[in-house]
Length: 253
Image (tube, rainbow, N blue to C red; front, side, top):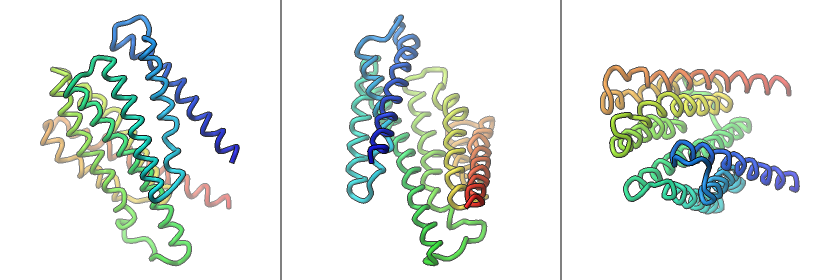
């Protein structure tokens, strides 16, 4: 138990240090200052500590899981809102940043819940309480579809709206951050989670591609078709990497 507590302390301290370092970047790029103000420094450090403690709510299940998750999100949203307000966000702009935080938090929470759910399914299978894999593992892929919908449809809509509200002529969120950072990272991570727990599931990257396809024509045009591949290809690579990792670990025992 002491070792677990120390691991939590280390994660929280590491998050606080990273947050403090990020305050320097925020101050130099957003606030046009030579260094962060004491308020920005403390808020960034506290927000980093909250991010470092993000795994703690998942130490329980049932009602305790929901209560701890809600409390952790409340603290995170409060710190993030205070930081955004200190950096100049007001009114609708502040609400937009908080909405993006909520979507990202939901993605992380849903990803963690899916991982827990798939572990339960794996245990049931090992005990002979569930049937074998479905054709192309479509049944095993189903729990990941809400995550794919939120990532490929909910997040693009929110970022597109935020760009048109606040970013002017340069779509920083929907044109740069989304296709080049968030889609590949989330696609690879979720694919690896699925592959590690359920083996190679070829339908998942196809589902990611199809989920994003309506956004191409709703928000952009045919030139943005590559966005679909920016989530589908990393999802396939992550799925294969997770499958290989699972095979390697199982061969050791």
